Image (cartoon, rainbow, N blue to C red; front, side, top):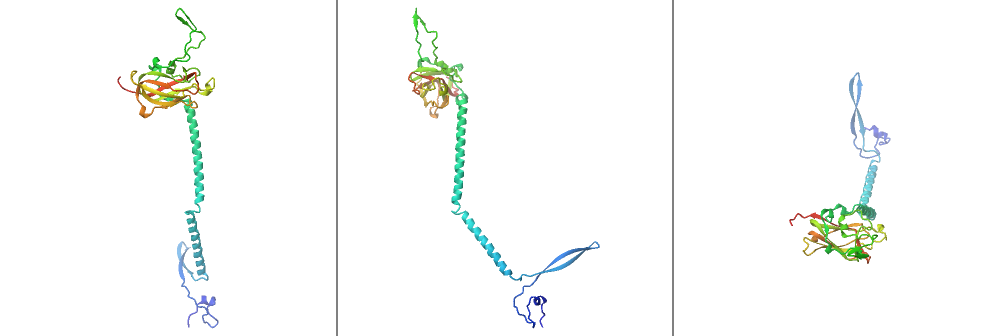
Length: 312
């Protein structure tokens, strides 16, 4: 007679006659041993206790399948979400984000550029470029005006009376300012302290003290806010610069420029690389002004460059 299991009897595996009524495959038990430590009279005792587990609990297969399906479902949602990220679904959102960021960055950049330009304009007004370059058209360095190649000053002297060969002038008549004032390098420029010539066209020729390789020229006029009549109509407009090494040599064209009445009072113009030359004589030729038909005024004219170490 077969041995009956007390565990199976307790679960209803046998009927009243002792015959099995349920048929299933029983999974073998896995036995794990856990050690417990006890101390008796300072000695360590090891007791082993058997732990029996079984994988054949009721409903375990169903729970395992549910867990697998849940994991599969989560994986499917994750895969779809990942595909959505790298496809066209969020592209519009990302495009809007990047577009908005780009617009804001461009706006901030434009504001910074505008602020920088304003600061540069203020700095150039207070400290013009011409004040940061050597000026070789200075009488203190030996430069001089070539009178026979320079226009007549305005207004011309008008003697009131001539007696026995002597010319008498009105004692209250303002002394005429000669082009030598351009060689004084005055700063700041004040109203009336300028060289004027009649009409809108004229020129001044200067002999420098030394030979230089010319790189820039500067032309100055007072700003509109300082003008007594609040205009700059007498300021030069379009002008050209010529130079040569010797007085008898043909002049060399150095460039044509335009003075901006809305710019700084003292404006600097760069000679083109192709026109840079070694000169000792420089001629400033005014082609027109900003509207004054009687006269034109030049407050400052400077010549910049480097010394040319040549033997002449």
